[in-house]
Amino acid sequence: MYMNKLPLLMTASVSTRGMVGACFTDEEREKMYRESLMIYEKMLIGGGETYKIVFVDNSGWDLSSIKSSVKENPSIEFLSLDSEDFDVTKGKGYNELLLINKAVEKSVFIREAGGFFKVTGRYPIYNIKYFIDYASKFILEYKGHLYIDIKDHNLYDRLGLGWCGHSADVRMFAASLSFYNEFIGNRYTELNDYKGLLLEGLMYDVVKPMIHRSDVICRFKKEPHFGGLEGSNVAALSFSKNQDSLKGKLKRFLGNVIRLFFPRFWF
Image 1: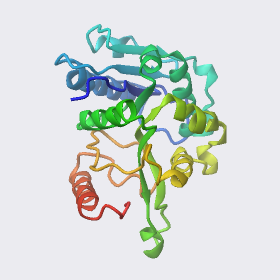
Image 2: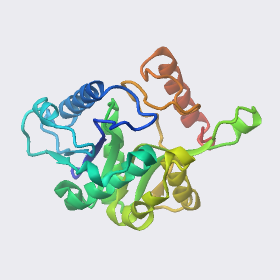
Image 3: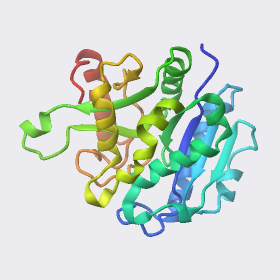
Image 4: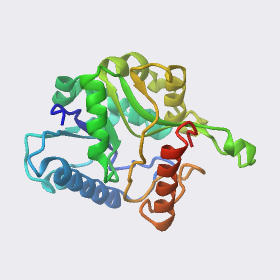
């Protein structure tokens, strides 16, 4: 197995600070972040693995409880950003991309690796090792630049559902620093959830012209196994709030079938 790994970048905004559309109380969110970090510590570090974790919060929340949930470990890096640098009136996408920008600037692990594997930190991905290993080999060994999953189909339009069939899944993706800084990072100013300018759409627009490039992977070979509770209230993005419910499991099974037998149908 390829030994060098991209660091896992867990993005966090523990306190919503009154952001419109944000889900769950601050205390509930803290518990979710704490549990996700504990799961990742056990998966990625507990067995003496070579993975590293960067936990970054942009809300000004006291991270003492989250830090104390895991053993002090040189493979886990915590960054607490100044909440005054973020604008809750522009929604989640603007602030998450700005968070990643600041993490790229400040994280020792990310700088040393030359890239990162970003996940939404509030809920775990139970098969995360597969994706980190795949992305790390692609980016660090084969000199790839972006590993992301997009959907690109017209089925919703044909069914008259009014949902978007063309977007990127930004809950998890990996990028080299050179690619991120050139094509993604400086575009955070274009985002505003409340004006319909979403990170999912921006990332799709970045990726779509590059789908035939050998240094870009824009479709995963298998479905991520998300746990926890989904926070999206957007139709077609939130199939089931409980991502491990029966509906969530059926969605994941169907997704794996489509990826295996219909790889050109990017549903």
